[in-house]
Each structure stands twice: as C-alpha cells, then as structure tokens.
Amino acid sequence: MEQEKAGALVVKMFGSFSLLYNGKSLSGQKTAESQFIYLMQMVLHHRKKGISRAAVEEVLFGDRDIEDPRHAFRSVLYNAKKKLERGGCPRADYFIQRNGMIFWNEAIPVEEDAEKFEQLYAKARGAQDNEERLQFLLQACHTYTGEFPEMYAGILWAAAEGRRYRAMFYRCVEEIVELLRDKQDYMTMQEVGLYADTVERYFEERGLKPSQRLMDSLRQLGEAILHFIRRSDVVNRYGKGQYLILLLNISLENCKVVQKRIDGMFRSGRQRTGVKYHVSSTL
Image (cartoon, rainbow, N blue to C red; front, side, top):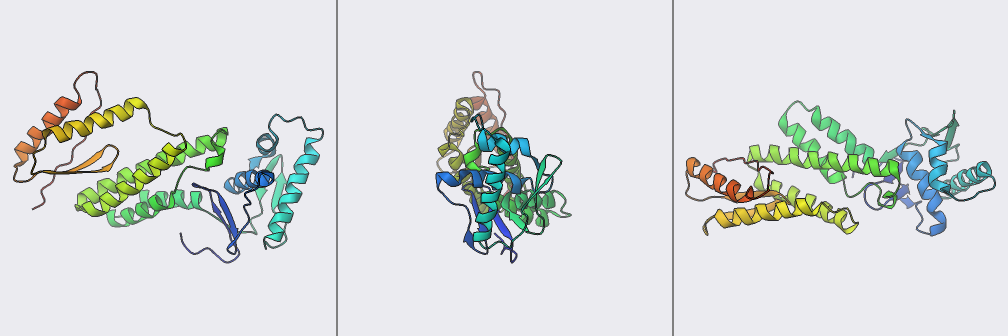
C-alpha cells in the first residue's frame, strides 16, 4: 500500500478491518467496541454520498427494544467522537448530519483500500496502452486482500458490496491473464494465479464456497487434461479452472487434435460448460 498522507485516517476494509491514524490503531477488538467499528465502517465507506441514519441505526441496534433510540444514537456518536480524539485525530465534528443522512467531515482525509482498488481498476479500463493497463490491474489485484468486510456477511448492503468487489477482482485477474498470455509472461501469470487462489481459499475458510457443481466441473477438466497429454508434456494449474500446458515437439494441427480430445471427455454426459483455449508457439 502507498505511504499514507500525513493526518489521513487509513481504513482497511478488505479482509480483517483496521483503522489507523498516524500509525496508531483505532479499531478495538473488544465486543463493547463493535458499535464503534460498525459506525465507522458504514460512515467512512459512504463518506461521499452519505448513508441514511435509519440504515445506521438498523445495524447498530437491530431489533433490540430501546426506550429512546435518538438518545442511544447520540450516545454512540459521542463515544465515537471521544475515541477518535483519544486516538490523536484533530478535534472536529466528525459526523455531519443533514436531511436524515450522515456524512464524514471532509476536513479529516480518508484513505480506504476499497476505494483505491476501484480507482485502480477504473484507471486500468481507461489506460491507453496494454502495458499501462497491466500495471494498474496488477496494483488493483494486490490491493484486494480478502472479503469486504468479513464481519458484515449477514448485513445486506455489505453483502452486496462484497459480491460487487469480488466480481471486480475476478474480472481483474482474468484481464491480467489475457495480457500476460499475449506477452508470454508465464511466470508472472503463475504468480497472479497463486495469489488469486490464496484469496479464493480465504473465501472458502469463511464459508463462501463455490457450488459443488462448479467444483465437479473443474475436477473433470483437470482429469481430461491429464488423460490426453503425453509424459513428455508439462501441465501447471495457475487458477482453479486455468491451466498452462507445454506440448513438446508438436504441430499446431496436432494441438487442435489434443484440444478436441479434451473437449470430448470434458463435455461428455451432461457437461455443457465450454473450454476456452489460447495456443501460441514458444519459438
């Protein structure tokens, strides 16, 4: 991650949530501080467009029977303000309330990894040449370090954001692989595949597993490839459904024969999923 600006609140939303100001952690791990964490995650992530007070109260209090919700909400804001001040943040009205919405005070700059990830991906899409695009994509890929944010799996808005960022990450990896394949940079391709696979295992550890049908298809693809390559050939998997195969002493026409045989075995029975191939000579 780039060195943060002096006086910026550094927010890590991907993977394990953290909140730093001038290198000091503000995100306590105690259960009693969960309301502070929930409040900061919501307000900071929606700091530009704002988030409705009703949505924040729903997450903070849920179905609990609170005698005076307005007073309880003011208490949460007051306690959060004091915690930020103790953490070294300059004294300010951190939470701006306007027309039923809550905004973060722009006088306190914020650096959020989720925003950075989205900005890098947007820069990649607007890049003028492939090398520039690849560099932005690689930076974006390594900014994404896990699910958005993990403690929010059961909250609707965060679950929707999590799916959106996850899909963006997968598109990012796919575009990187396409560019690296064109460059025949197979070493970097493998590194990216291993990184993506590590993130995938992170999801699985938290119960975000792909369907059994998909896993069966990926297993069948691997079996089909291993069945039809020769002992002198080399195969390496750099993603759950992505393989790099080195076929030695073979013509382009015979490569197509191998492709058809793999397809024939993989698509047998009720398998309808297709396989996309890219063939290039190493000479």
